[in-house]
Length: 362
Image 1: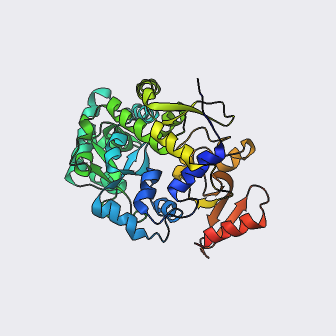
Image 2: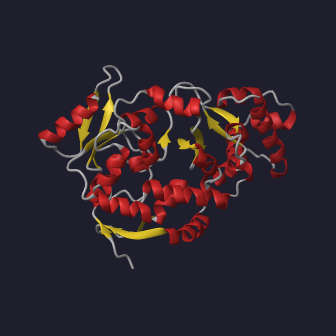
Image 3: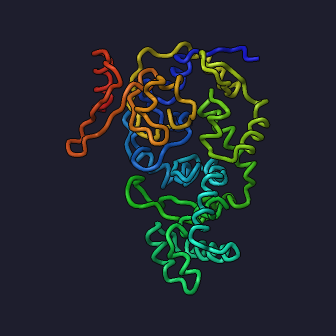
């Protein structure tokens, strides 16, 4: 029986303060620990610019390309992410059933015989091991393969399907080997080269999912089981089994009148309760795919009014305006003037407009 009910303002106030969204934090390591993961490319810089006071792009580049404590990798339904190194290999070994099915369908549509797929797969892996390369260069190189292998790899969708298969096996991933994060195409590299201290191919998917589940509820709790399954994109039955294994280490709470069961670690609940109600009318601007919203499936009611959901979109939300953690509008950058344009879902007070304009100016 759930015995604790949390107000949305308390939850959002605690999380926004952790992440520096209620007033940029001076401590980048603290922000990164609270955020947990970042989108790839330019959005990673924007997400930290919204959270860390005086953030400079070189700070994140140093962590990723110098210290190597965070890495860029393809994970979670094929998207690109920046993750702590300790989590990234587990994310790589969390295959999406939908991705797997789409890859198999592409090979079937191209007429690739099942008996010969391992030969084609080996040719792709060998090419990546010889020289990491972006997709266009890899395609050009493999076009020189002789016989049936080269013929099949020249067909639409076959190379992409084999790359998905190899990523699901933990054999390769897509990353950038030099900064900045928003320049140039990511390259396909052997996973063993990106994670020399680990062996992603030997990591059991169940164990990988256990690590991801513990990480997820620490970073995103209170959240639902469905939120976790949606975020990681793992096989539904296995996600349910792993969640039940973890459940004894989580506390179930109610978040206002939302109809779902929410969970978070006990230590996180203690810190959240000590935080108080949370800030008043805190304004923040975050990029598309920001961790604030992109880590959850159940967004309506928690972050969005029901009537606003269609304005944000389910798969690729635009850059967002937040007020006390709730989405109240979107923003865009004028490509010519570089000015930020704010679009409110409904009229905002002069104070909120001034606060949003000040954040945009930053």
